[in-house]
Image 1: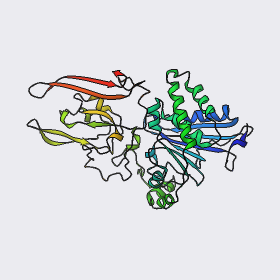
Image 2: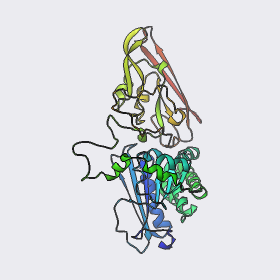
Image 3: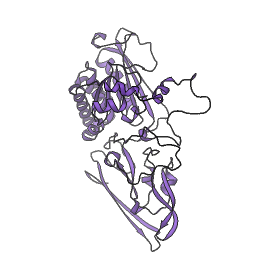
Image 4: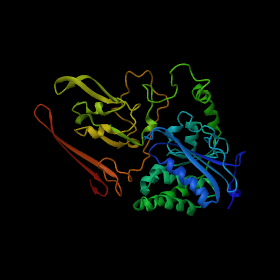
Length: 395
């Protein structure tokens, strides 16, 4: 094989892919597997590398892959700005326009979302041929990870990769390291590949006009650089500040608040790194004290430390997609403004692979938790007993 199998290349002779993701979804490994796929299975020359910051769950991750004819050298080692294929592992990364930068009319977009291609195009103002698949659902059903599902979908969408080749790279990369999870991962690759080859890629003209209406916010993002950035210590992009929207950092899980179990001990507020809990003066069991009124989900990044320290089970882990309307959602009253791009994100991490705290998830999905507490006559906590169950038995 040679570079003739590539359907299109840029002026430098490269077929380029960019992955947009957050830490924890496996985009870095997916990029490496795509790079090896080109070299070992397609007879191409290839290069891949990733860009990420603090290597923490929820932080931005980008991965770049280039293919060309085997006899051709790859001299470009910069970021991929105008990809032939763009894969988005978390739909919230598209909310400010930065995730889809550089897309052209012929760019293939593979998006992990439950939205239809038309809804995704209009909501995010996308240009290109759009393929949507619910990779998180497939990963949960196949007991795999999002990165292998997206690997299969990307391979299928490219049009010049065979299913056996994608399976072989998955087997070679993950088979020895995670033998117990290999069958599930291969199933994830197969289902992703099927979605990439059988789902119709669509393009919508109304998305272009919608994109033009996004205003100065998106165009300002594109214009800012070291010469044009505002003078002073101002960060005009959303990040860890009082005006932040941290929803893209969540991987589908949020703390659920059960007010009837709360004893207002304040441990959740002490453990929370982003001060999402809203306490104010109130009455608890006839006494004046600071009472927990709810959570500010604009700032919650889903670390779930609060659920680990809560002694009464008033805070438990839950899938955000199952709780779109949260009665206890209370924005911080000291916010200068509410983030206009806030999105309700769904689950996008497999809950059947890596363990979390004391839960055993391989082969079982967490189905429920029951907490019993004991207090004395004055309401002071004296004992806690928690029982969790998974679909395969008790934990």
